[in-house]
Image (cartoon, rainbow, N blue to C red; front, side, top):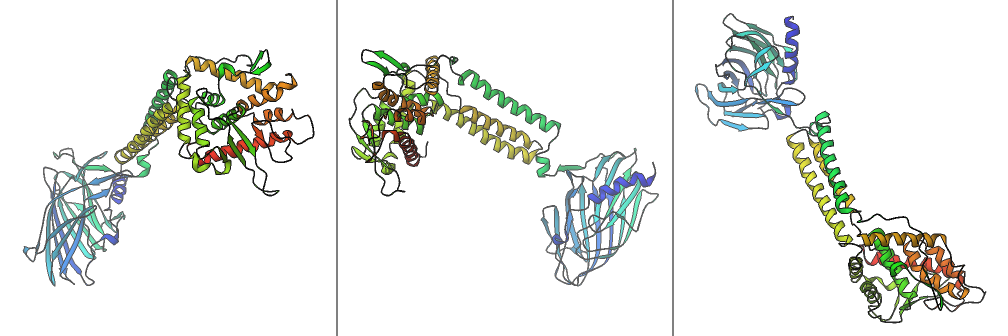
Length: 561
């Protein structure tokens, strides 16, 4: 390989290895500071240290003179090369420098001495970590001339490096790969380097190779440079590890659901549940297992929500504990409103959550307008939900409250997500495996999401859910038309709360409306009445509006829903 081709990679390396210093970071010099002469001698010791002595002839324009020795330079796209600097001293005109300051900077040491007029400054220091191992063997390098804020007319360097075999030199401003004016290897293995005209902020860097006979050991040190791209490197190792971590988290979440979050029994399709009990007084409504509308909604979606409470209120009205009175509009385009009137206080036949709802709605009296319900409901709705969750456990449909199960899983997922955030930050700072932290975060998110379907029904709860599914099919497919005319209104009214919780309000409200067989205004049907000239045939729209309005009141009153 030719010498030129062999030295080209070294030239590029030295170009990258120029001190990471912008001119703006150079020491501020007096406007008329002038370096008139510069020389340096350096010797490589058997311990791999470079002992440097620099002589600077200066015409000072001020009372202090500063320069910076950079000890951290760019080695390649990902790493910086670091040098050690010790035994720093200086003399001015043969006397120990007054006011010598050796201050740390981001990438080196700033040296400041007191000067006046014509001054000869001699710097002495030792550089460690100058010997590097390369494909061409051992190499020694150091930017000897550096950190001056004023130009140098000519720099002369003598570098004693035992067993040196070749030498190259670069000069100019930062990043330049321009060869020095002259650089040669003398017979004594001393490097002779000259550079005419070193600009302010420029440098002169030598690079020399060692023969196989050299006993010095490589001691170059490198530090990985932090970058956002490196912190989140996407390669086979980082992506592979991230996939493994996420896979473990995903499998763990699925396993937890499989063993802890599934229903105790499979819910079968079953046949439609006909909620009709034939008796001496004719066909009567009879819900499967006596389940109430609020219980239906909680068993189906494992959540006590607005729909469940609205359906419970309708059921209490149909069962004659309150009546719903549609108020006349104040104008043709006025707002619809309703008054709720309590008919009975209720006794032990009411379930705790039903009693809690009645007491919450009528907390300020036995009559209340729906649009004014918000302030009185706000402090009491949570108790209704608590009682409804407790009820489904008391009934034996869930072993543990569904909301408590979801909270535990969600908390675990959030904790894992938070741990993933911390891990991402730590890994991004110290390594290239930031993506692994993202995988932990994703696993935490999956755990929290799986937790939303984790509440497990007992075998009894699964059986009830199957019967509820049968009831839903009946409400979807059947009507009250095959019942005696005298029983249709009551039957449709009893079905309505269940239809409301299962999303079939409109259909069964129309079933009630269909029982209106004349054109005369109606006073009401006991549990629902309208304003003057109201017809039972209008109840479909009336009930749809009521369900929407009351549900909105609940949502406004309590953001938990």
